[in-house]
Image 1 (cartoon, rainbow, N blue to C red):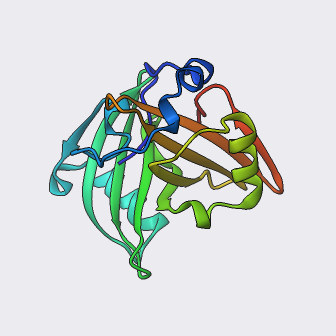
Image 2 (cartoon, rainbow, N blue to C red; image 1 turned 30 degrees about the vertical axis):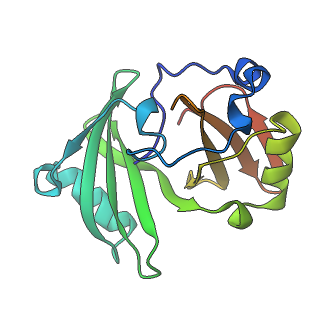
Length: 179
């Protein structure tokens, strides 16, 4: 499942200068982006019932089949995943908010062709040699969509680039997007 931990270094310039993004990559054994996460798999039956209730309320037509738990910035998150009616794998990131829980983003993997042109333009203007191995579209629920582009260097090192799309404005982010 997806987001980079708060411990991830944001070194776009160094990575690009080293040419790590411009290489063709063999598929890694683990999910692309997993090395940037500090998550623990949780059996869906063991996920908190109130977290599952929030997920089901947000997307009632999805049968949720997987869960992960993560702590970022002293906040507990659960990533709850399943497949929607279109066959797309969907993940809801649910954050502890006081005594309750709330969905902070809904994500799905997409291809470069599915990425809006303004987003692609912003990415390649700032990282011209990047070759995304994985792209995640992350709907923040407030009109903002964050596009996450993961790359894999020859040595297996992963990097993430983010573009914020709000309306027609696409902005290359130099720091990890925070809810």
